[in-house]
Length: 513
Image (cartoon, rainbow, N blue to C red):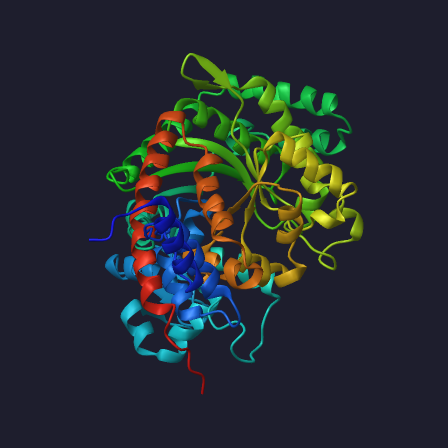
């Protein structure tokens, strides 16, 4: 046996180094975490020509947290509406392809078709889909209305079917969400429905209030008119029953929605195309409902932003929110907080409206109405002081709801024309959402696919947007903590699966024809 000595050990180490070996014990190469491997996998899928089919699998399996910009009636597919209509033995006008309302008849010379009859006529069925959604809009030449009109017109076809089938609608949206790994939806459900002629029987009084609101040129003048209206509402015996009826119907429709996998909460809203008085009554009723029902977590304002009335009354509407913010607080445990507002603002682009109408909508939603989230925000680069505005949004933690498909269809804004890159550069928090998935015939997974293929975000960024959908939700703190825990668990499972899939595909050659 050769005795080991320090000199012999030194000579042995030198010899090993000379032939490229280490005298140190071999160390196992550290294995990358599942999260790190998933990040590499995502980068691999985006490299070169994106591997879209595998990427589609990736984003479908991705835990997506919440869908925060979501319209209940517009999220339901036309096929679902037809199923409900058939179950009620409802009819479709063969000429207009609108629902034949109970007690009415189809247009002269037209037939009242059953859903089965309609579906047997493939041409008519396909035509209905183009009217009740955006199906086939860009696939072939035909006489078309402008895309934004096509989008918003769809609601007049299926709108009457939404509320009577609310429970079925919510259940179908829940199942569809679970199927694509969405665990929370915050949907714009409906207006409360207190009408101006229920408050004032005399049309002259309605006209007087509307005229006063339109002529008001300052916040103080608006407040003075609205104070008087609120006083009248408080004297109205019809108001409280409308609120209670709304809450009761919502609670009934919501039964069975929340469980260990999923939650849903609701916003109510006003339509900005109506008389100023009606807009205010809808907003006021919405604030009052949200103050009473834990299911209603926010108030919004909807309808086309480029409509004449919407443009004329925009600042007035923001002042209505300002007025209500000061007067109605929502209970938050032992304290109270301001109303949660996620306002549609900046869903405009050059050419839709005169340039001056692009300069202030997002700014006023943030500064006057005190919105916590902005829906769309597409015209940011046309605002008067866009850089200051984005810095304000970042400092106040005001998030942007990014709706890629509807922005492309309604506004024609996509790719590098979309302000996504601008908001990203200024670190404005962003949330990926669907808007009206039934009308657009897509889902939240597809929005993440578009985001990935258009802008190549890192996996860390992608994950940030998912967690933002809980962080900027209007859930109460207890429910938000629960949603975070569910999301954490889902990501552990997702990243374990994706790490294994990455090992299978990363060395496979990619053939092209």
